[in-house]
Every structure is written in C-alpha cells, then in structure tokens.
Image (cartoon, rainbow, N blue to C red; front, top):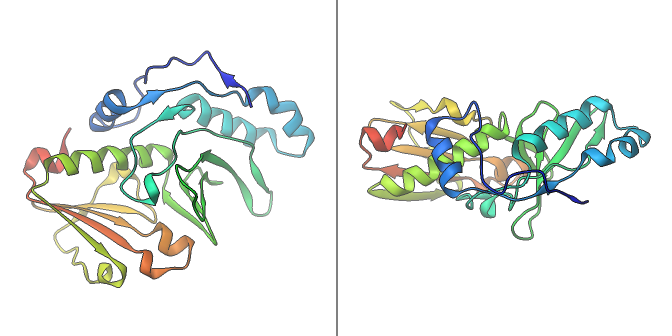
Length: 221
C-alpha cells in the first residue's frame, strides 16, 4: 500500500485521552505517513467486505495511522507503528482488522476486534483493552509508573494468581478487558493476561508491581 503523505509528521492532540496520555504521545510519539487505505475501498467492497467495516478501518487510520510509540513493557513491545489494513472476517464471526505490524516475530498479531477492542489474535482472540485509546493510555501509565516508582517487581506464571487486590481499584482510563491496571494506596499493578488467554498458556501470565508511589506517581495528571 502507498503512504498517505497528508498526515503531519508530528503527533497531534487526541481528544478523549487523559492529560497523562496526551503528554506521553506529544513527548514520545512520532507521526509517520500512514497507509492510504481509502484507495482500496472499491476493491475491498468488490471482495465482499462491508462498507461499514471499511469505514471503521478508515476511522482508525485517521486517528492512529502512522503513530509510532515507545515499546510496551509486554507483548514484545506491541505494534511498531499503529496502522489499519484490510478488514477480515464474516457476518457470523464479526470483522476485525490489523492494528499494526509486530516489532519482532510473534505467534500472534495485533488487531482491532468487531466491537472496537484492541487485542491480540493468537489461538484465540484476546481483547486487551476496550479501544485503542485504552492501549495508548496503558503505555502512558507504564512509562509514568516506571519513572516514579521506587521499586518495580515482576511476577510471572501462576504466582500472579496469588496477588491480593484488596484495597486496589481498577484504573478506568486504560479500559481494561483481558489486561487491567490497579491503583492502591502507594502502588500500581499492571496485569497482563492476554498471552495466557490468547495462547492458552497460563505460564505467560505476568504482573508488574510499581511501589513507593506518591500522589503524583499514582495519578500523574
């Protein structure tokens, strides 16, 4: 596909994101020319892809296309660049489209699901966040927590199930589905279940506990 050179090379403010995520995108994101998927509309419709699904992919591309962000702390860093592609699926199973190429060779791909969730497609579909906004919010929160935490503890496998979330509340802006973030009195916990669900591999469970956070560290805007 050809690139859409009309997009600015600089990240732009994205309505609906938290102040923390805005700062993250502005400071660390790079907007590259995204894929021009509009030019394929007629061909895709000719192959039986519903116009509404193409419109959904175009809307994703208009908002996120060409945006490169720093690596995520899990999923081998997440998509290298956010970019939509040709929708795939059926009326029965629903329609999904790619959300960007992997940074390294992976056993799954990053997709936007039938309901708009951002997730991974492995042996099973695993929606990580209810939208791509939630994915970007999770990247921003991880970067913020790493910067301000006094301690970072990585927990893997079935030991994750022993974590006590009493006194913690879910962080709403990440729109967690399979993956969630939790905020306590002086710590944040990132819970990564996507690979365990998508690959049917409980050993892939992972949690990152960011401790020693003050009020700014817990929220950051």
